Length: 288
Image (cartoon, rainbow, N blue to C red; front, side, top):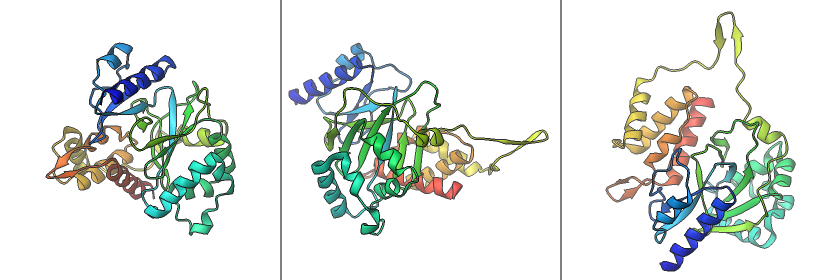
């Protein structure tokens, strides 16, 4: 336990020295154990934390992450993929064919079928990459000063973008995290993919009004949003879905809804995977 405390604290301070910030997560629930939203993680705060029963999460401050998931992939296949990446590194993307697996590689299939496939893979080779316990992947890039970054849940099937300053991803030396590719410094993304996903929405003006997706005056969704954020939700999946739909219809961030992760009802802990699946389902319902 003392070794974990020391290792995590050293990791946190090392990231801070490079200009990056980390927070502690409860190892059982995956929830942050301190208030961190819009709070700078200083050396004083890091040294005050008991890291012994914690995992480490990297805040997306100065960086953004492409999060490739395997939630909808066969578990055995996902573990085989993980071993292949461990052996071949990011270069596996060059020869990996999704058709061989009937496009059943979840987020990996989305990357391989993307119109930006070649560009994405070349950028993956230039920056920091970690593997997750489930066979997923986190690819982290340095933010640019001229881009308006934001979270994009389900930008492609099985692929999320974590880019809000208060977004975070669990990283090594946390349980279930493994460094696949080290770099001396984070690389900025080079190419059109970043420009496209973070492009500001274009609103077509018509006389005094604007042509935009009409908002459904969904009072039920608003109430569900309040229940989730306040922690008073009883039917958690249902409320989260309604709240997320309501937020998407208003082009409102869903970050605040993540407070539901780690909540317990009976013996049932609401997991990050459940959260991401429900958010993705809501996104598809609203945007098609």
